[in-house]
Amino acid sequence: MKSIPNLLLAGLVLMLIVSYSNKEQKEDQTQMKKEMTAKEILGNPDYIAISYGGYREKTRDIEPTVEELKEDMKILAALGVKILRTV
Image (tube, rainbow, N blue to C red):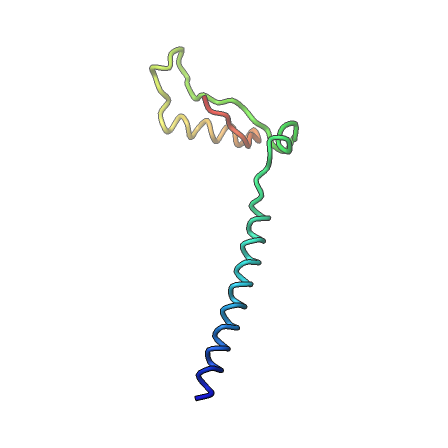
């Protein structure tokens, strides 16, 4: 009969250890995924930004194709643009 309380105690201890470990992992992930603020991005040469519309005609009635948009993204990436503002 003493083995049941011992098993329950061992299970409780194990649950606490796992719970604490998960909490630490979540805190680490939160720190790694820290969102940058505009203050940290603006003026930072590592974050080149551009306002992008994708339209190639004089009117917005003619929308760019997916292939044209992909081509534009490749060009912007080659130029080092990392942030897009879309219209």
